[in-house]
Amino acid sequence: MNNYTIRNANPSEFEEIGKLLISVYSKLEGFPKEDEQPNYYKMLANIGDFTKHPETELLVAIDENNSILGAVVYFNDMQFYGSGGIATQEKDSAGFRLLGVDSQARGKGIGKLLTLECIKKATENNRKQVIIHSTLAMKTAWGMYENIGFKRSEDLDFMQGELPVFGFRYQLIS
Image (cartoon, rainbow, N blue to C red; front, side, top):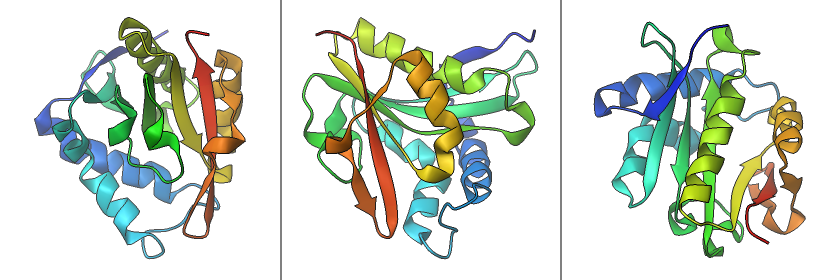
């Protein structure tokens, strides 16, 4: 078993992470392509911009060679989450978005490690829940999220153009 480290991304890695996420998302079957949602892909390319917001972190999973295998954006304050729907109005809540794992590193638990790190950060910051969104093109990840304890939350659903986006909650404090 490889040893993976989860840490905050360095600004020098932002461009590489953006390219990784563009590669991951553009290959998802049924997910909009760059010509269909150019602003979404521009956001991925400039993923490091999220770190300009307070309490927002770009986390990476690296291996022993310091290769970036995956990334996620953690939001300790939902007002910076930047999604449609009601999620940005949730108080005392954390969230994460834009989780992606390099196609060569899939199936090694990296997505789960990134997810658990976000839950750990939310717990340390006394948040009451973690909110995420996913699409049908990412249905493979739904099982992982549900096994960790996320529950579908239809009140968080919204449409991103023609794309239905589905909300999930993970309760930390009842």
